[in-house]
Image 1 (tube, one colour):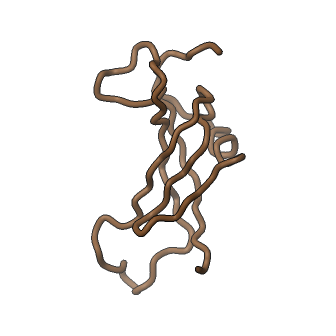
Image 2 (cartoon, helix red, strand yellow; image 1 turned 90 degrees about the vertical axis):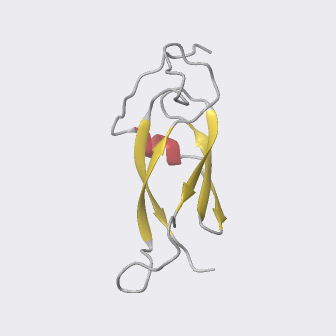
Length: 101
């Protein structure tokens, strides 16, 4: 496997590629997304925290569909990655839909 260098980049195809085979595990305040990066193909877990503050948004109900920004946080050593960064530099947005318990 060829390891790609670090590059902050996105592409329209990343979201669809990432969600193929994605596992979502609900947590008390969000979800853990387990999948492979669409750019470097490395597996990683991404923690999404839905609530930073413990109150309901205006209107009293949280959204059923959320746009979630995701970035590769794999542990692979990508050449050129800044010391304070993780992953290969790829980022994208996905839609998460909350289902009834």
